[in-house]
Image 1 (cartoon, rainbow, N blue to C red):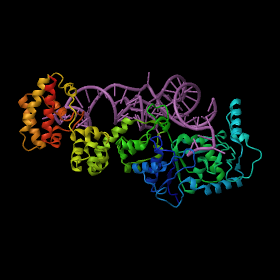
Image 2 (image 1 turned 90 degrees about the vertical axis):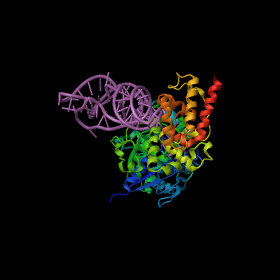
Image 3 (image 1 turned 135 degrees about the vertical axis):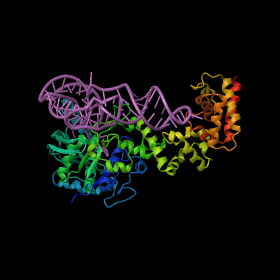
Length: 484
RNA sequence: GGUCCGGUCGUCUAGUGGUUAGGACUCCAGGUUUUCAUCCUGGCAAUCAUGGGUUCGAAUCCCAUCCGGAUCACCA
């Protein structure tokens, strides 16, 4: 019988999840869901020095936001727990003892300074440092509190990686490495293998920085006589300069930063999944369901990809439009926290109307703040914006003033303030003033909003109300005459 | 330095022996929207890292070189 697919995301709680490492959560999730298997969240918290309070919550929050639900792990439990490595020490000790019994692990009380000396010596003599060349002759019986070291028996290993293909690890890649530290906690190198086997994990999906350690891991699977899982090593995501892998040290933003900047989780998931993966077609927009259906491990790119925020923003614009068309209520809900503080006293109904005329100009939800402020408060009159406009540059201030004056007079006559009536009035005005559309409508648009973008004029005017429209036009007329 | 991985438009990529090397983002131009943005159409843009082979034919197969990245912890 074929084994049930089990994948996992196993972050260490040392801070937020950034763009560079979230793919190692997305891909295992997709693999598990596609196969109808399980996706486990495991917290690798054995490094007490780098442990950050609250980091687990941050991880949970990020995964939830992206829509990556897990079947076992913090918050949901499961039969293979605990899901925090610090709570699993008995399991590691048990497996460590197996290795001691088979002669493949030994207690190593060599002081760090001594190891440092060996390393220096090897470096000075110009050959690679391998601890197994300095293995102590006599070792005490192991007990918790002593470092436990793997005893390498180097071999040539071959293995298959779903992304990288068939690979070899020579003897020089295998060494005596620490399994359990002096603080009684296991190292990643040991713990992840024990956890994976005890949790029946079938696919190890992680960043390719672990590739050079594969010799040691393969040796461990071998010594423990456990079956190797399927290996999937993901290429790195590079920062904007393209020269370095994205990392917190170099200011990589957290996934939730993008949420706060108005990126939709659907867009983020879509973007990240397609950074270094594609289905071979020209499709660009993928829903989570599309991804679950179409994702294939063997189509993951081998080369590192650069993170391009511009494309993310474009994709987000696509998703905002898609969401408005398919589920406007949901878009309104998501937009809720992004409205300008000036809008706090505005009814949801009015906000929804504004959204319906502005949504196709939004690239991020955060654009809402700057792009809709003039609906709530009178904008500051900025005559330069008016006078520098490409259609109005040639006009004198007097001409501009007359034009706006004419607009006021015309709009005053509109009784029933509907977009249709406004449109009709503006069209008549076009004929009466003998001007071209850009020349007439640009100053009106600018006078009403003083914003770089605004929706169609009649709709904007309707939402603003007749009184506000007339007041703003008059304010600009006054400003122009003061200027003269 | 040793080991490992990689290398197609500026960026993300399609491509597995025969293609005018295709698409997307960005940028530019035109059009629609009576303005801006959206949207549509078109354009710029890769001598497929370089040099050798193999072959009638190579981005695709082989070798070498170069360049880039990762990793060499009682971190993960």
